[in-house]
Length: 249
Image (cartoon, rainbow, N blue to C red; front, side, top):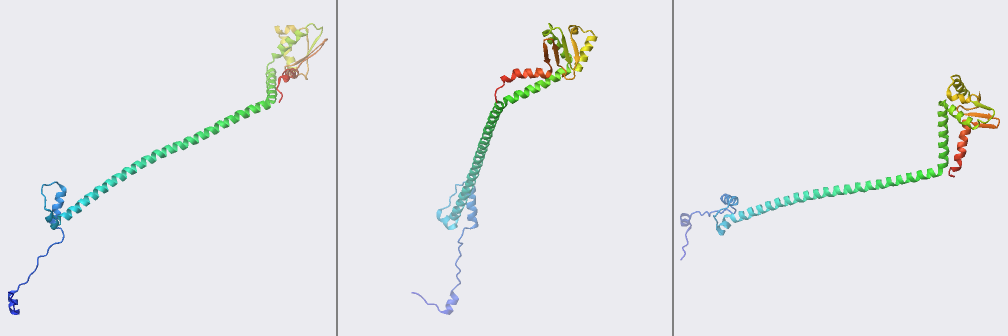
């Protein structure tokens, strides 16, 4: 049966009750325990109910999550670096191959253009030669004639050979008169005075200087007729023999 206390008795008998406060989170000791277990393996196991009440279970969970997250991030970083490296190498390889292909195509294109240019040059050369063959032959003949004239004018002995050949052709004539360029005339006379053996055959020949005769040539007049052996006439004869053989342009 309950007893109701009076105020005076209650003040005397009652005492102040202060309930013990409980921490709602893991203690420092729990954190240290979980940290030590994470660093090395241990045979010591804590009961699940105690782990729950002490916060160890929650710390374990967070520790595992942190480890998993760290491992995942590290693995993702490795994958990212590997992917970047592979992409770089692939890009470098593809870039090199593309650059080579582009340059090779450009080179082949230029080479083809150069071949076409050479073909055009050869075609043009052949066309020019065909269209101007006649003119080229005439030009070559004129140049050769001038070179021959120059050689004859510098070689004084040439006139001796020319006279020897022509006099043989008219040696049966009763009279032989030879017209020479004044320079050639002086040269022959000088040889006569020196009694050069080659000039002995000209003893019965009358030689006269003539300004109209080009140096290196001569005109022979006999009782049978006249032989024009001037340089101009000889060149003209040579051209007359060559001209019919020149292709018609």
